[in-house]
Image (cartoon, rainbow, N blue to C red; front, top):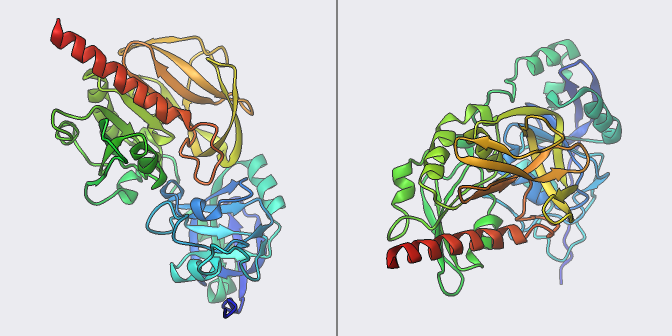
Length: 396
């Protein structure tokens, strides 16, 4: 067997400039050039390929807190979408070569071929601490000839970049046309899934539970949802995605129609924030967000602590927090079902009078952990209950 020989990369000088003026010097990683975005950090020790291909990272420059990145290369199976979505990539020590039997190519080759500008040989611990203290902010990575300009000029470019607040990005990452993921085995239910930046693992996990998933573009109307299935969908799902939930007015209006029709609803991440806004709650930007696969979340109904996967920079504003007493809304009573143990951020909502619930984290768990997989079973239970009620009503 011929040994895999990685491509040798010539590294040019690179500079990372934050919007508050702090700069870090390093070497080029991936494509050479320049990029701007919002600087965020991810605490996952594994799963960098899933992170890179998560559409929720649109317009964000991801700083990896794990010191060694690229050790397992990349492969076709672990991608969560058709491309890399991060605006830039920051690592301390890039792997010289991959060492996984599943790798089909090197990570840096993939970054370069997809035009992702990155930087390596920087103190990512110092950079992460800076972001924790000062908060997520705009950043630029400049390598090659782009790094030869004065820092003042680079800083000006960074400060001209758009802010994440007010950004409507779901339409930029959604599927251009609807498609169907067939149920595995016997079809039990049909679900309309709004793609706001969906990860491939999500419809696969639904399909494994006997659900035929109709993935719709973020611009879908309520009529498009009603057209799913023989007599409309058994349930509606809103996915994760990038951007500010306050800028997603069309999707919020659509979700209110779903709630009024009492169609079972399940939302994750961005879908959780949209449920909050549809119910009348506000959202706000977190100082530096939750990103990684090691976030502790309390299920308030069971008292169980789950270790969960996160990727969000916005959260639901709950009146009177941290008491989390149930609240009345236009759609009945609502309670906070899950809370982050690190900072008391609302991590889940449950409607008590309409069939709807959501969580802020990622139960599809790509790349792990799997503590929250039961939430997909809860969606099945919700649709089963609704189906039984409809059948009883028809026989009455």
